[in-house]
Length: 441
Ligand code: IMP
View 1 (cartoon, protein in one colour):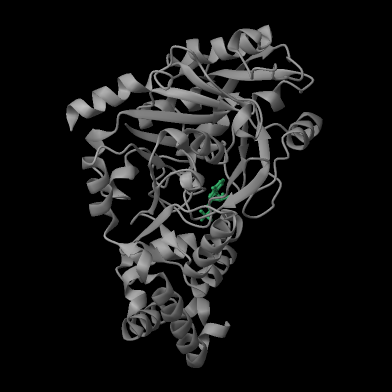
View 2 (view 1 turned 90 degrees about the horizontal axis):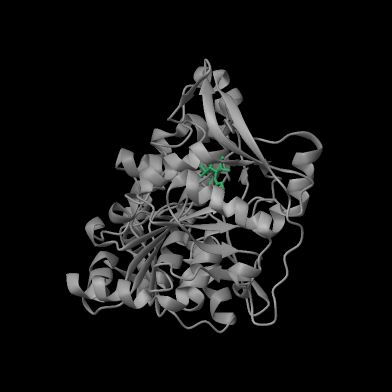
């Protein structure tokens, strides 16, 4: 089976946990966008793992791939790989030779650009993501394979420096000796990563032909997509399902199953519109109950109620087959629960998510109240859907009715064991999906 796990909101939906949970059913896991801006937390066997670059499937998949669509800080990657090995994980790691390299200079550029943006600052993760993608599209970027050649690294660093000198002139990188030493460090780390570098698009296809199941793991979320998100308060890559093809080379027509991950409420880090944002005491209560602080930056996340119109849009844009709803345990503990069901403008429902800030300020949101369901406990044999509180059923039914797709996965805590796959769902009937997949081979 070829599956994809994607975030449908502003990132931090719990994709890491869901991917890790699903990874027992897959042999290969592939990342195709973003870089160290992503922060995926996985709790396995009582231990917490934090990934930024390595796919979250790495604890259980045979092979994990960092695709060409990613931007990679090679020093950070070496550190993550070492941590993974220390945890006893033996999966094979493959890095695309065509992925772009984030250098320490890009991280400085990220902060400088934020200062220049002033009131329009995005609140980036300061991981050098934007400037690295800028260089990719300016055709001056450094690719992983370039790290093997000291001359090419030096030439590219000089070009990038000259293009961005106005931002870099009062930093350590204005010193040619510092640029030279950075090139040397990048070459050294590049050589150490050489055994892992591949034309990964070929290897993914080989795995596909060998009948392996492959899971594509999106970073960030639809509303942070550079084209379809809340521009300019977005990341610099595409985070939609379509991006998995371009960011890995794998043909999009072969994907069997797209699982969209949504939190039972919403959160966002950084600036930009957030229609259902909760301020005041309720916002603080939700943030504290959910420990909503960024995995990458530690920043407090903004929080809000579930936004059905926005989810409907994300489902359409990603051709989502089914939903995984996370954090239902957290939401149930709130004093009251609301869900936004409609966007209204001039008394009429609108069926799109406005992107102009003027229009966004004119919409009114309609909400439905749901009775909180309190704490949820697993019974001895794990969870069964029937034993979950009735109010939670109501919430899930509402989501399914309004969105027209099933909730296949329910997440009730951070561990693998706090996860329920619904009976009758396609995930439960994996053999069927696998047969469908085999027929197309
Ligand atoms: P950048 O990707 O670091 O350039 O940040 C751009 C925007 O995307 C900022 O609002 C970040 O907070 C947000 N962002 C980037 N990656 C993630 C993520 O993995 N989760 C949540 N927000 C993210």
